[in-house]
Each structure stands twice: as C-alpha cells, then as structure tokens.
Length: 82
Image (cartoon, rainbow, N blue to C red; front, side, top):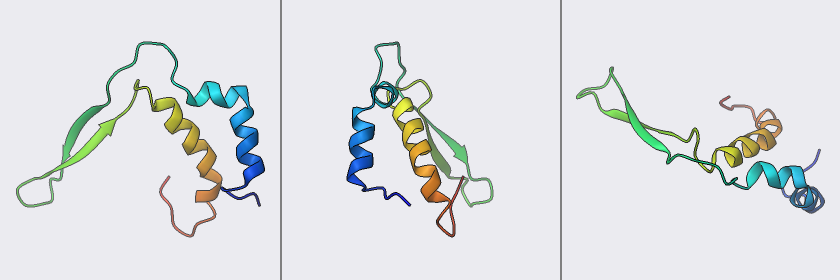
C-alpha cells in the first residue's frame, strides 16, 4: 500500500506534465464560486444550509484531481461519504 506522504509518489506526480495540466488553472474564462442556501424544512424557523458551487471556478480542476487521488484511501476507512 502506498502512503499519502510517500515522497517518491509525490515527486513523480509533481514532475508529471499531465498532472500539472490538471491542477494548474488554465487561462480560460472562469466564474466566481456561487453561494446559495437550501432550506432545512424540518427545523424550526427554517434555517438555510449554505452550499458553495464551484462549477466553472478556477479551483474546479484541482478539486476533481484531489478527489480522484484520495478516493482509494476513503474506501479503506470504515465510514465515508461518496
């Protein structure tokens, strides 16, 4: 099993041009993340649950990359959210 902190694995990823292309924001039109709220209808006074949508934002590619890299480790934990 490779570790998250494995130095050789980190160095290989940092040198890989495909990885850099995935995580470095490109010069293309991007949008500011949007904040909106979903009502908690079963609570008193109906408070809002804040949601941040980063679709189209400069960090979307980085978030997708990190999600893919961490997915194998999440399955090793007894409880996780997919």
